[in-house]
Length: 344
Ligand code: AMP
Image (cartoon, rainbow, N blue to C red; front, top):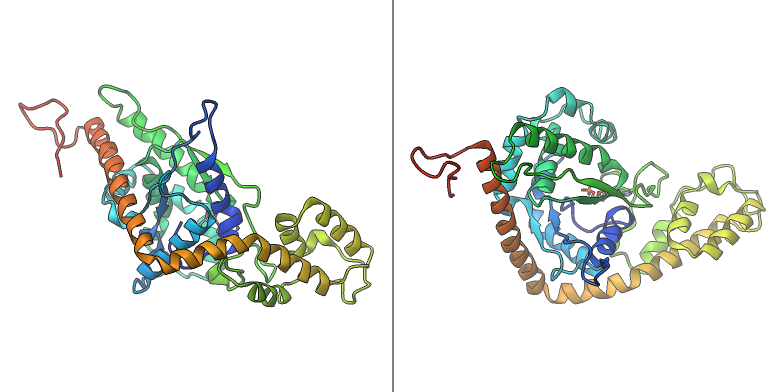
């Protein structure tokens, strides 16, 4: 996840919730089903903004949201891309394994260019999924929990892994990389308050995980609803209503049924519907807010979590790069070990 500061409900329902679920999943023997690690993609921030002045404060803000939502640093190291140099190294190698035409076909990129009205693309932005492939494969991930918009990137990662394995079989254990599978979250595309396809900081249509209940209600009042339901008693169409899409995520099954029926029958007006929705969201966010306050008051603890996570990540990343260099026969020394590698 890119460190863009405080997170919103889209990050929560599209990624964070399933990260935590996956982190806590137990296998048949009662131990963790997965080893998980979570990356702060600070290099990726540069694809849409060259401003780096606030990157550290945004990183800490985002990390606090992660911790508040249940990311457990004892189980899952958290670390910044820029602090584990192997990300840049593997990105360079991977960028030779994919064509620019393939990257230009990436639908997520096309969507971003459209949403942000971008007139031209940098070389690095085009290579966004290549760097992401390095992020994923350095840790030999089998499963990547992602929102819908990231599926094309996991597909590119699989292609790059396959290409690398075919081109460079490892001298002793064959394939260096497993092909990772995307694990799609149920609410992988949460609509923004303005009814636009995606809740997104750059579109300014968000509810933050750190919003207090009165702020949630204030924002909810601005949410776009069914434009054909003008008066309270007009029958509504929940399937086109932004607020109903939030109910489907944050309200109980019984509430969803009664809200849907009452909206269609013209019994429930948008004002009351929004109040109920805001209350349910605030209820879900209450434990996160409490934990956020704790971590804000213990910021050294947060910084230390990052420091420890980066130490762990460097160990894994350097082991993978040793295998990559051995498979590619980079750094062989004549007369030395046949697959000797350069130690940096
Ligand atoms: P980003 O901030 O673009 O790096 O997104 C981080 C993660 O949050 C990605 O897995 C996205 O798919 C997910 N995400 C961001 N916004 C939304 C949204 N509105 N709905 C669902 N998932 C989202």
